[in-house]
Amino acid sequence: MYPFIHIGPLTLGSYGLMVAIGLICAFFILRADFARRAVPADSEAIIGIAGLAGLAGSRLYHLLESPAEFFADPWPQLFSTMGFAFAGAIIGGFVALVLLAKRFRMPVLLMLDAASPAAAMGYGIGRIGCLISGDGDYGKPTTLPWGMAFPNGIEPTTGPLGSCVRWGAPMDCRVHPTPIYEFLAAILITWILWRLGARLLKTRAPNGIVFAAYLALTGIARFLVEIIRINPRSFYGLTNAQAASVVSVLAGMALFAYCRKAPRQQIRA
Image (cartoon, rainbow, N blue to C red; front, side, top):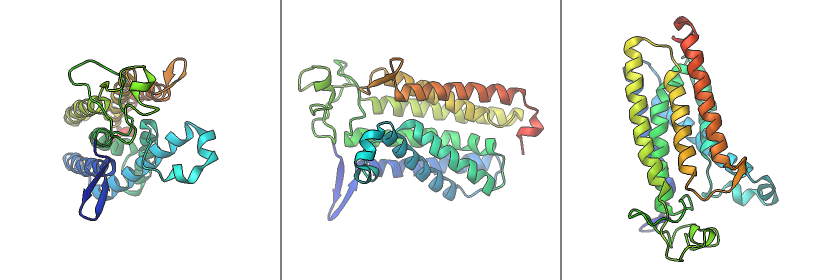
């Protein structure tokens, strides 16, 4: 694994590099979505602000999952490049997009619909950064042919918190490369959301349905991948990420029901 990439005197974190690439890809998707919706908005500013808010929310949510550990020594953990939470990224990005929608004077649900395919792809590419850096975001030991080992990652599979140790597997064990699973799921979700958006534009359906699908599909994908990950269980046998995923799916279902019932003139610009 390559936690850091050295280019002469310059050292780049592989996770941060992939996040940057994810934001660039998200920008092009968002710009294309705004173009097909004929929305005059600043895609660069929206992606930059929402992306930073998502990262901040993701980091803060992860830290607050273990408040006692965080408040015992907050500053080093606050600025660490390790540990990000999916639910926090959604919350942070959502708040930023709501504020940006008001700034650009567009309906909030229209902004969220347009940003959903971009958010899905950006997240998936960011997960490849987890894979390259070997930051511990992998799954349980497996004998499947595509299993991978992370002996030199930031959190090696053979380390104190690694899968090989936790599950009593051989020290040279291979694990599920869950970041790849999430990347593939993100590509599929992005495609579904993009096609759904095109179909809804033709039928002049209410805004909000694409975002509802985003909440449901990303929640389902994360819930399933958590089954084979190494995160501890907390809520009724669920990991924190699975509990947040259930909330995401329910929120998506509730939003879909609202959009289906609300008069179109109250949803569209």
